[in-house]
Amino acid sequence: MRILALVTARGGSKRLPRKNVRLLGGRPLIAWTIQAAKGIQEIADILVSTDEPEIIEIAGREGALAPWLRPPELATDTAKSIDVALHALDWYEAAYGPVDGLMLLQPTSPFRRPETIKQAIKLFSTNRPRPVIGVSPAASHPAWCYRVEQSTLIPYVPALPAGIPHRSQDLPSAYVLNGAMYLADPVYLRQTGSFVGASAYPLLMESPAESLDIDTAHDFLVAECIAASIGKSAVI
Image (tube, rainbow, N blue to C red):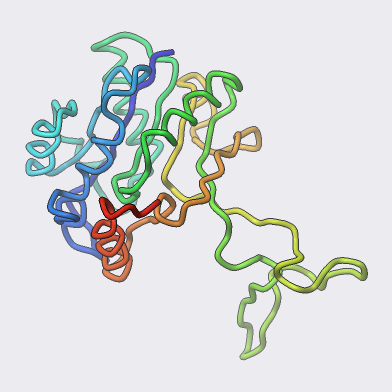
């Protein structure tokens, strides 16, 4: 099994400026993801796709492959992750030969553990060509979610039928994509244009720390608390 790990890291971020190079626990945010993927036998290379020279410098220092700046059309707010991934995949396979899978590791999930990456690869090798997607328990169950229309609460899920438990702890489990793990077959990616599909195999990530997706200043504050606890016998 030969896997290409792809770390996508734009230089710009409106909600949290320069988040990918911000120091978290004394090292740049992107470094956490690179280090988690290093030393895993099935990962042929860790490729960083970025439009920021500073990130290229950090990636090289951390032992990742960062040979070019991402094309401008793939560095906009509206650029799609799949287009960025296919650009990197095409380049890598032309330069280094085919791979069995492309693993997308977003740097905004810094506490993803090497054991989880290995588990994803094991699931992928068993269930290929089904993609493997990281999921976490939903913070709010869909049965308790509403939209507002003309100052009225409208449930997203229709009224629960008789016999279905109404207490949240009795409802069936609900999960959300956490953004921490995507692993797919290159042929599947090129055919479907997506990491996600009806056939996706869920990789359940129970740890709230592993599932953290840093998007705002508040998220980063939470990450700093977690980083400070690491090394103090904290389990993430």
